[in-house]
Image 1 (spheres, rainbow, N blue to C red):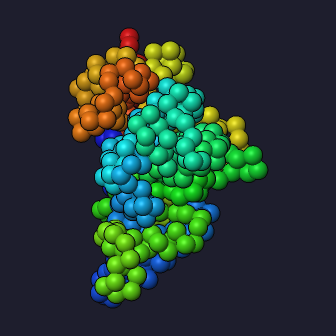
Image 2 (image 1 turned 120 degrees about the vertical axis):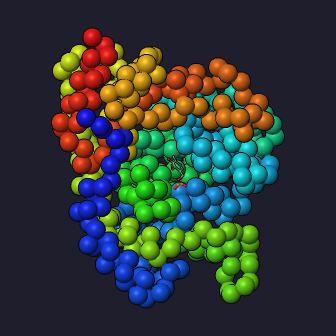
Length: 394
Ligand SMILES: Cc1ncc(COP(=O)(O)O)c(C=O)c1O
């Protein structure tokens, strides 16, 4: 039985008529850039997320890049982020000329550790003229937590640190659209808890386009306007460039497709959560939770529906590579997110980190394994995955 990591075929078949009608409409109109479909989609996402403003952009990477550029973050600045994420998180910080400062993760959630963050600030930073400066005389201007695998970071802690040190709080919510976080007075969705949130609609994401696409949400109207200018090369009036931006536009075809898909996002996330529950229950029933570390659900008791949206179902174990091979031999596809922690990437060698600086992220890179999960995965397929894992340990 061949089990892919992700299969979007069924999702497309269910919506193909609607998607074709939406793309036909765009093709008939011959309006491809900054048209009505984009506005409709932006309004729909803003409403879905509970965000005052939504700005469609060309990818999740460009969402991060446009935000950093619009904030004029650059040379001499440092931006704190997690050590364990997709490359784009650190890459965009470096691309604008700022220095990424990596922080280790919590071993159970894989998200940035608030304890490690506070320790870094206490040990290496001091205040100069009201600004936070690190040991390399760089001004720390922003904090970019990543909600990895569909689970929000401890945003109470992130908000407290950002407030205390006057940092801009940019959520990399690329993997977490719709994920909820419990606040003292209610809850909020990923991307809307800090100052600005970035989403990716890469095809494999919970809400996936038919190509590259992304979006930024924010509270501040002026900043939203600035982002709209930034995504058009910093151009406000025609051919008048106020500042240097880029071509970060989300096109009409992608916006039209995403608009068709958005109303289904909650049911897809619920189906992913049910699939995750099945894995977890089965692993526990077979006593395998002692052999493989299962995902945690820290906000499950908060009565939030989307407390985890399981973009990935990631387990960890010391014999990860052996298990991966065992599953591959049985036609079960798995993935490693991520085989290298960010400071281990060759391109970040210049930052001067060394092996052992981030023990939890380094261990996660050696031990984590993502199992097949998608809304339409059958219980039969999942049972086969569980049985093959049980066989590995027998
Ligand atoms: C955490 C994270 N940040 C940023 C990105 C970049 O998004 P995109 O691939 O749409 O550029 C991704 C996508 O893979 C991601 O997972």
